[in-house]
Image (cartoon, rainbow, N blue to C red; front, side):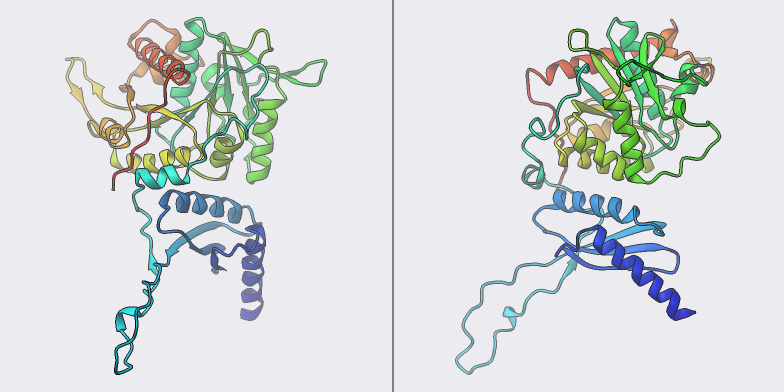
Length: 397
């Protein structure tokens, strides 16, 4: 029994090696008794950004192997041995000539500007073709779930539409499609056009698509990476978002949380104009923002700024209470060299709008003003991308 289990784990390890293409940078791959894959990858110590991208890609591909429940990656790096000098006259070797042992690269290793510039692709224009009928694509991302990313995406899109822009909203959060609930379109189904394309569901002046329109709301989404990307690609390319003469001004994509295979593939294969990162002030959320920023930097997607949610709660006397911490978003923005585009407080009307299917941005209360200011800041940042270089993400040594 023990041998059969060991052989089964070895078969999984061999399948992972095959899925990765048996690269020379893969030092070892093994699978423990719980189905967790442990990969040891040799990375270039002079290119931390490239090492992080390699790690993300390996995690994504290994996670697609049937039978793998989780993936852990250990990065190693080998220092180059110093130039060999002559031995001493008595023939004894110089001990300083012994090659340095391998050292592990800390998971929290910081990315330098130089490494980022060396590892980032120079251009994505030649690699990713534009989607007809869409002028710009803005991804709303978060490296951690539960920070209000979908709420920001829905209200940002609604505020832009209310301001007169032609807006589309794509729910790419396959495993948690909440946009139908937030827009009051649960039960809607996109129709098919004569040329066999999906016609997005109209909601509050926006064209919207979500996997929630195409699946049973009670059915669990147990898809793996390739199927997820196939669904996202179909909703992007096989839908009538706009025409060449009358394109969308912007398509807002609510991406899945995290920095896994789906997020990396969207950044690499979709003609993304820019990204907006959502976080809360608390340190546990901010710790993941760096990872998300590193992914976009590696894939040459401009990040126009950060949005902080749950910034404070204001009691009836007007006093502010910083329940999730104070100033964390601004500190992280300063660290990365990005603007903090808006701090969004805890407001009952934001929650009620999401539950009732009418985004708060469409109202006339304080929340509407917050999201309209965010929409204005985002629109300005997108316009500036065409006239000057986007903000450069800075990773401190």
